[in-house]
Length: 358
Image (cartoon, rainbow, N blue to C red):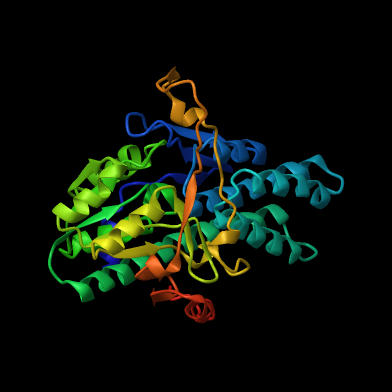
């Protein structure tokens, strides 16, 4: 399966080349594939905020490389470069509040910085750490793809329709994807007949990104309005909803793209299994429940305008970017450390004690 997945890999969104971070501008997809180069931490922080790069794992990887850029600039400037670097850590940490992978990656980079020894080349060491974070995420996705595929096979071994929300694919990660990684693996094994992709308003990550990724891979996919999900579950024989996550609390509550919560409620009502796929870096054991997860709210103009043209009445708009799905609506949580069925606090604690499987 690993070899099949590697052979099928077509989409990448993050590259580190010649001392610069290159990001595929996801705001322009699917019509334009434009790569942007970044050579400063401030520019990367702005790219994260403006959603040039998005998806919790991808944000964390981009932030790790941004720290490398910051180290290079601060060392070159001379003086107390470690103290000056704190401003870069602060700027990056404030770029997106919900995706915990961002803070996980920054903590990894900070811890490596603290372990520098006399005579170490800080730029070389920190670059190695960032490259390692990127490679580790890619390996985690390969592991999760195979674990999730096996869960699907155990429940029903024939080809079946599934649904996904937002984009949890190669564009949102270091490679292959989380939810889409499982879907890709299941399709290669003859377990997925068709994918129903929610459009995912207001940024249309399902329409612009997920549909594009799956179509590039030759996976049968169609788009639907977010509000059509329950109807499709009832009429199309959908057996699984498979999504990613931006932060998971210690009790198994999951923060993901707005609309995920109602999707899970609909899935339970219709007897559709609900799977969350995310690396362990997405799990925040410091938060007791999803009630403590900070929920980002973006400008209401994203709902009121289309391509700069106002399309709504002159009223205010609420634009929360994420919602929290309670753990008791989740059938399976798939991580690179293993699979948790019906997650709760005890099972999450046990999961986080395991070593990685890849």
